[in-house]
Length: 269
Image 1 (tube, rainbow, N blue to C red):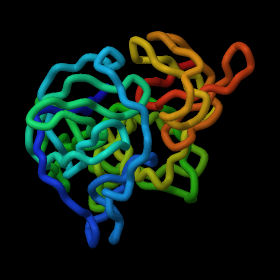
Image 2 (image 1 turned 60 degrees about the vertical axis):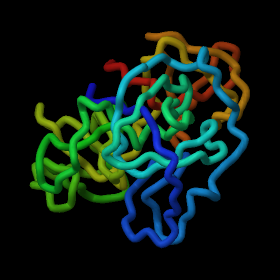
Image 3 (image 1 turned 60 degrees about the horizontal axis):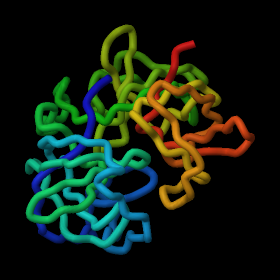
């Protein structure tokens, strides 16, 4: 597995992204800092439930922000401030069923995980430079779609050296998501490679195993939905669908449950 993502000590600087001209692909369930023109992160809030510290997976370490992202009272909650790219923060823990991390410092709150990386794994992004990419772990089989052929590159950029081309329908084992970009990291003939996420779709159904100590199973693809069960580390499920980062499967009693894709890993058959 590659690098994980989290954060620490915080800043109270507020910001608006209206008029931002740089656009990157962001996780599907929230858009925070680098957005299409005219988007305002202050408009994106809801009543996502608060977490107590006892509900968090303990982290207790320093991490670095990779983009200017909101600090919130709870996941998707009231905005307290923002983190600064390149600055260190202290992360207390991570939510067990969604991609949010609690940080502690001058202001305590939650930051979306896609914008934070462990201090030891942080690199200043550089175009056309290998091994300098901040990557969120992802372990999932995907299939080439929406194109007759897609380039596999040595760097997550359209200017990256082309290794080969894959045809529609070919399988790819994705190992990570390059933060703040539209690229997946994968392995090709033993080397690290990158494919644009526009052309990869999760290959379903597939069997996946829980990587968290304990993971909430929810009634819908939404962090606000009721918890209807839990998975323990190593528990395997046959995933039937991916709904914006929430994986769907059937419980033994016939009910449908959902878990976050961050805490599930493909099981080789």
